[in-house]
Image 1 (cartoon, one colour):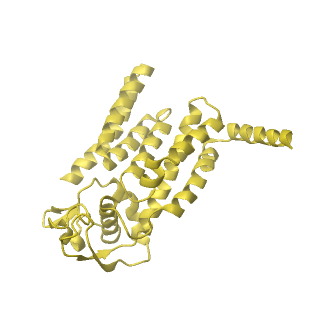
Image 2 (spheres, one colour):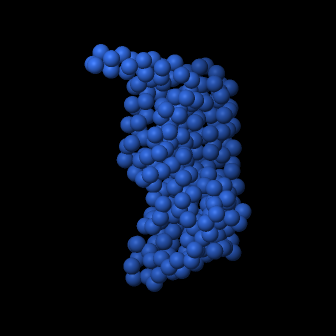
Image 3 (cartoon, helix red, strand yellow):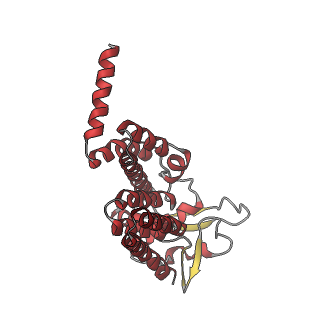
Length: 270
C-alpha cells in the first residue's frame, strides 16, 4: 500500500511538472476560490474602508458615475470614517480611495439583480452620533469580485514560482502558504479592500514580465490605479530588468505602462 501510494504521488508530481501554465494556474486558483467564496463577508457587519469601495462600485455600475449623490450625507464630518470614507467632491461626494477596486467590482454591480435597500446604520467609531439612513447595496458582488481576484492572484503567483526553477510541488505549496496566510485569506479575500485587486495586478505583472514588458507595465499601471504606493514596485521592476538584461527598452516599456495607470489616477483625482 505504501509503495503504491508513493508511486501515485510521483505520478501526480510528474503530471504537475509537465502541464501548461493555464492548467497549473487552475490547480491552485480553483480550490482557493471555493474557500474564499465560502468565507468572504456577504453581509453586515462590514468594515468602513472596503464598504466605501462597495458604495462607489455600486454607484459606478448602476449610475455610470463616480459621484455618489445617493450617499452625500456620508461626507458629513459625523459620518466620515464612521460609516464610510466618503469625501466632498465638487457639488457631490466621492469615495476617498483610488478607483481601482471600484472599477473591478462595478461590472458585476451593473448586472446584479438585487436592488439596493434603505437601511439605518450606526457608525462603529462614533456611537454618540445619530444613526443615518442610506441606500445599502448587496455585498455579494464585492465578495465575488475579491474572491476571484485573490484566487487568480495566488494562481499567478504559483505560475511565477514554478518559473523560478523549483518543482511544481514546491510552487503549489508556496502559493497555498501565501493564499492561506492571514493577510490574504482573512483580509484581502474577505471584503472589497484595495489589497486583493492590488495583489492580482502585481502577480500578473510578474508573470508577464518575462516576455511582455509592456503588458507587465500595464498591469503595474492597474496596480497603481488601485494602490498608488505600488509605483515603487513598478520602478524597481523596470530598473532591475533593464540592468539585469542590459536592455533599456524593457525599462521604457514597463515605465510606459505604469505611467498610463498613474496618468489615469491623476485624471481621476482631478
